Image (cartoon, rainbow, N blue to C red; front, top):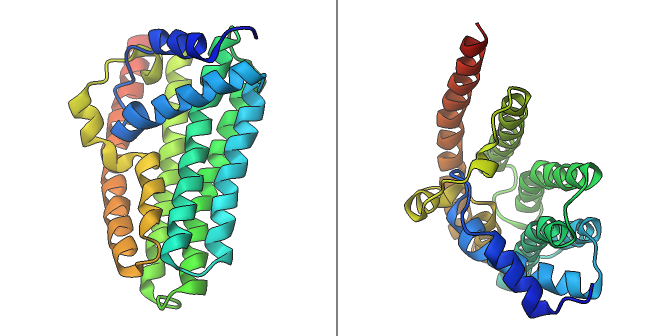
Length: 244
């Protein structure tokens, strides 16, 4: 643990030259860099990967709790967006801390994915409840948007994990491991980025503006899921044919 902050940061930067084909822009060009700084700091002071995951969860769920407890004001949105973004940055940091420590563990990977699943399953339901409690949209059909967004995000998360799991059973590297991402592709995928969704909460005090952007993201993510599901099914079917 004697490495300096600068040395740890340089080590992580040298190890992360590329990114996965499916990685969207904010995650690659903003969140990874912020996570790298947090990881270098955490490594320097002795924070473990699992502790970083816990810190991520505390930031995220504090933000969601405030969304429920506070009025739909501009300052609420800024505070929630900041907490969610920091939670996402610490989520990036935990894996980078593990890399600095010589590798992660199965338990750490399980914890990371478990917290991610809890976060994804909770976020849109909290939005639904907060809109019901604090905005004029209570009892209107607009509340179906976060419900639909929740279904889309949960299915997308599960589909990605299952796709990689089945490929690994056949000895095929995961998309994340293969890399191959480009700047253009990352920008095209930006609307699917959880980090961008975190920032959208800065509009929370302007209910109409927030819901408009939120609804557009929900629609784009639904279209992405539809296209991705076809692609994933074809890839798994191709592996079946290879065995035949």
